[in-house]
Length: 338
Ligand code: TXA
Ligand code: MG
Image 1 (cartoon, rainbow, N blue to C red):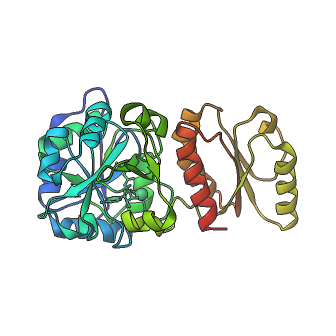
Image 2: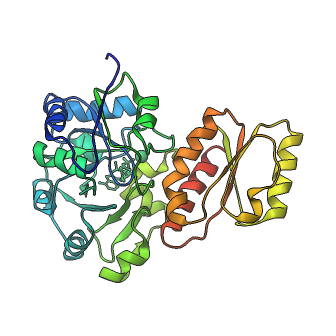
């Protein structure tokens, strides 16, 4: 494939003609990366088995990891679902468009690649003017895994997509950086109480306010309901080491130890007390609001990789609201390359 084309779009007034080009690519079975409020997605026609297969190849995604189908509104859900539970419907009405993916019983005619052979299908209406216009013009469903090479931090800008997938996909719709910066929350509403399969842009607390109790899974149930979660995720090339929030002593110790080992050190911190601590290489100091941290986390991990650091020391965040999603990503990043 020749180099990937990039089309720039304004958030306020997305140009419908430019979006029509993307729709044509999708109808022809091509691949189009699109912005959402969470991260960039890698789009293909959900009902075109060949196009779906190309998504797996471009991303080098393991075939047992199913894809989210993006639709323009709740009305489009019945194209893909055999049944929709009461609680699922209530959540969709309250939070769509938004960072919530709902897992329903699938309709039989969906290509197997989309659902990785499961009996369920994951659906989401993204909250982004460009992609909502794309979905409205396209009319059907667009699969959208994060538009990164599998296992790497998700892309929060068109540049990240280009760095990972140039030459492997047809087009990128560039509408600047994403606002939430962490993927959607995935909730299985085929059972009661519903089960969280991935915590993300929508918090437990917000979901429970609308439907009462939701459950977390144990490892075995998670693998049965969402087999793709077994794979490496969110991991930069460097080793990630998490340390306790505002723990100055431990942070200094980690720097000393890694310096002794001749490691090139990167770090990501938020607490004021850590901002000025001297260390050898690259220090990303973020504002301490959890929204800011979520929005910039994947970008920071990618930047530190570009600096070719050996190890990234990351300060933990408080595990509530969006903080639960940030800690989930950081633990996975730390686990998979420790
Ligand atoms: O925010 C997001 O969700 C982004 C944007 C582009 O919408 N997409 C995204 O897709 O993060 P991806 O493929 O990187 O993550 C989708 C998650 C995976 O953990 C996958 O295993 C799970 O959703 N999933 C998809 N279909 C499923 C199904 N039928 N049952 C259970 N889990 C499913
Ligand atoms: Mg992903």
